[in-house]
Length: 193
Image (tube, rainbow, N blue to C red; front, top):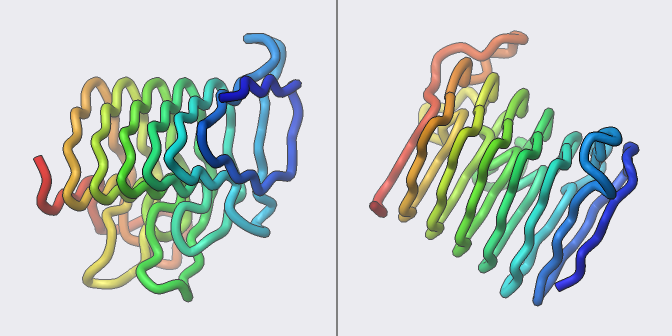
């Protein structure tokens, strides 16, 4: 795949990556932040497999979609290293809205040193039929819709295998119409191992 080096700055983006894949990273470490901003107009990044994609030291924010407002990934190997997913929102009118930060199906995921925070509705991460390593990550202050059934506010996994280590889940809850989430849960696992 291609290596795409991005200069520091804020970029209004709705990117689509298909096979064989790509590496997205800043031009040089420590020279400023690279922000990919959906501007509440759509999904920030769509990864369509088969593909191998690596994201390093990026901020993905302001995405808006029914699933995966930050990233929607299908049938791929996705590595997310030292990134931030901030303030992405799922469309409440969508059928089964979930995964405001990341929604993945049929993927192998390696997520390390990454923060998922301040996602509005649908929870931060939603995975189906995936294998995941979540290492040294923070999942903080994420919300989900005020319904009895639905995704967890932090991480929802259906038929997945996951290893979660040295990661913090805090202040995740059900959206109560207030600025601070109330009730709800950080983690939901259905089936899998």
